[in-house]
Image (cartoon, rainbow, N blue to C red):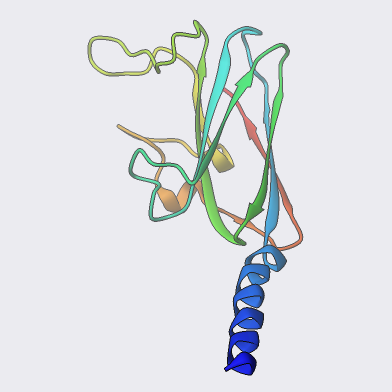
Length: 140
C-alpha cells in the first residue's frame, strides 16, 4: 500500500507541474491613447468567453501618458483576443449615448473593427506562443 501511495503522490505532483511547464506569458501594449487621464479597462478572452462578459483575465491600467502595458503570466498557450475601452471619466462604466453607441474610446486586438457590436472573434484572435508573446493595440 505504501508503494501505491507514493506512486499516487508522484502522479499528483506531476499533474500540478505540467500546467506550469506549459505556461506562457503575454504582454499587451496599448498605444496612441488620445487623452492622458482615466483608466484602460482591458479584458483577455479565449474563444469560449469572447462573446460573453467573463474574461479569462483582465487589467485595469491607469493612463498617465499615451501608452500603457499589461502583463499576463501563466497562460495556456493558444488563441486569445482582447477587448478594451478607455474609461476617460473613471466612472467604472463604458459610457454610451441614448442609442447605445459607445462615447468612450474602445479597441480590439489586431486593431479589428466591430460592425454594430464587438469585432468578430476571427478578426480579433491572435496566438499566445509557449515562449511568450507581445501584442500591440493602437487606439484610434
